[in-house]
Length: 244
Image 1 (spheres, rainbow, N blue to C red):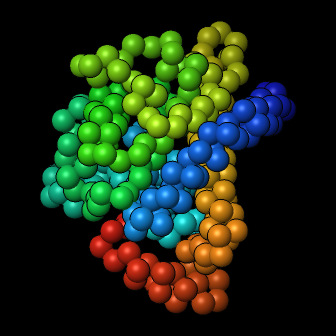
Image 2: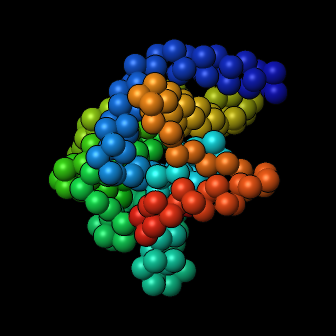
Image 3: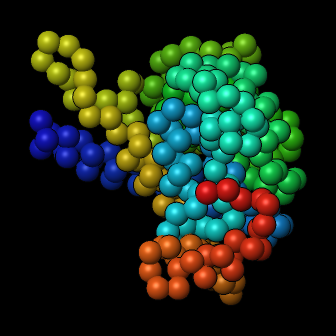
């Protein structure tokens, strides 16, 4: 099964890298425009799609003007008891309003929102808020999975319905890729391809900034010589606007 999974991973990565290239370039264009206007990038994903936000925001080799929005913000910044967190929270549209209000958002900011299914109430409502507030929105989702399930949002809309750019992570319905004898599937792939898309976006943003003669604000690893000093100096430019 390991060999079969590696084959699926390789083929899916190649497919996503090829078919989503135009979308990655358009996403990078929106981000470059936002950064030039003084904005930052907000990344949000619920459930395991939080891995995408972690890949975009606050990591070595990534863009400094990035802010990670997380369900934990309700506790860390909103003062809610830790018991409020749970697997069903992502289905509640009301949570989106609280998360958006807690985020250090400015008008020029751009949003990247990830959800494999793209149908849960919080994610869709968050996308609605982003668009109502006039921001550009980039979505990462599985078109196959999202197309086969009903929206859990009262409007009936899905994440892909609201985004300016939609990137398909190539994951199958249910995310897992290999059938298990006797029932079930194993070997999820959406986190792998979402990480690929995050890195492609960041690389394309940096390429465009370099070609324009700009010094891209990129994190060094905190575990290399001078990393902390380098990162702290860059983060100071965006004080109060970014969270790792």
